Length: 187
Image 1 (cartoon, one colour):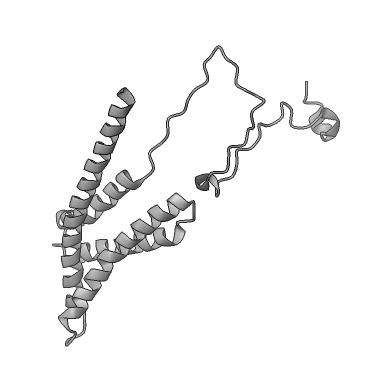
Image 2: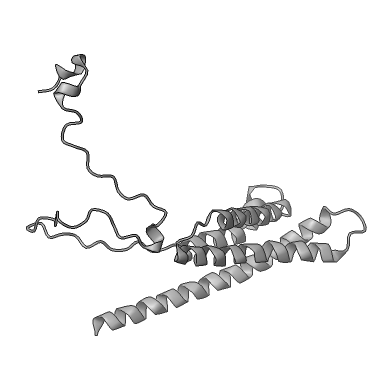
């Protein structure tokens, strides 16, 4: 029964982490939304409707969410995540720029204004990054199984990774193949 308790505990912890992430995301989004809207309206030509500030704010908040969901979906499928990651970084950069632009000049103003974006990015990485898996070590008195394949199975996650290189030979070249200067150095 201990494994069932551990799995329930893990699920509850995961749920709590997601709830914390959503709470921080809501507040960070509200702060960023306000900053982007204010920044847009302050830097738009005279006569630009207020809707433009709202539109920029909505776009700047929805693009990162779509990117995060796309990255998770692509990771599960083993697909590349480069483009959605680029969009996520660009959108986070825009949000951070807006927060710094409307802040009081000075380090404390910039830091306080950037806290929502930085906290959200840090929590996203913490909660959504894959957890390292525990390795099972071979007991010291039992030699490793050399007959098993050295190449891992090709799971969707390892599709884009190169297999490990085979170990180097004990001597890089036979002495007969070494240039004459180097063959005298071999034992």
